Amino acid sequence: MLNIRLHLQFRKRETMVVDKNIFEKYCSEEWLFYLNAKQEIREYKAGDYIIQEGEEVKGFYFIREGKIKIVSKYGTSSEHILRLAGSGKLMGHRGLGLKNYTISAIALLPTKTLFFPMEIFERLILANPPFSIFLVKFLAAELNESESRMKKMIHFDVRQKIADIVIMLIDAFGFDKKDKNKLDYSLSRYDFASIAGTTYETVIRSLAFLQKKEFVRLEGK
Image (tube, rainbow, N blue to C red; front, side):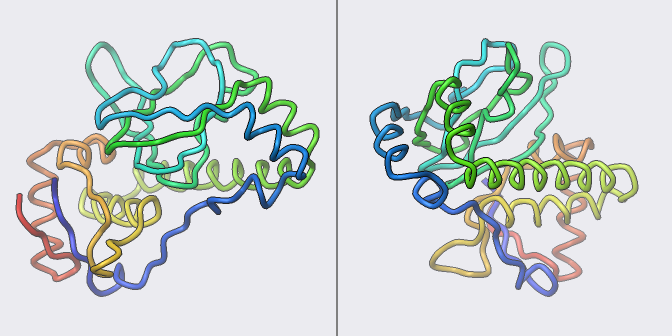
């Protein structure tokens, strides 16, 4: 795994993570009791599929602990990373109204989730207006982020794309608790290449350039 320390303009960027108590914050006491009764705790090892593209939509997930990547496959082997998610985020919620999932979710580290059947999700939205408003804002933020990243992938050069992925990691996972200049988690160079739509070798050269300019400092491989 690649360790990255951040400097200059990357250094002060704050992580943005959904409140870990979103259900307590946006649901009534009766619904909290109901959700506690209906939730199912699921645990995954690094590399496990939490959701698999094409499988039937059965529910949505709340990430209690861990880190995941959302991917879509092209052909039989090519995998493209669409976004990242960590503790406090919802997952599988875009399956609402669909028959099958259009993406896969893979655990990057040991991950613990709360799983709720999709019919519970539908009732939750209808019965709790504050949660419905939160969900609309959450989906709007996700859409804006996706559109912004798409524009960057079109207009940015490769070095800018690699730098933007570093910022993407900050937004998703934040910094190490003991070292505030070090990312809490970093993707492999192959995953960098997947997001940027470039090659492994180009990622190596781009990271070396960023290090030379003292935007980042790399540790280990």
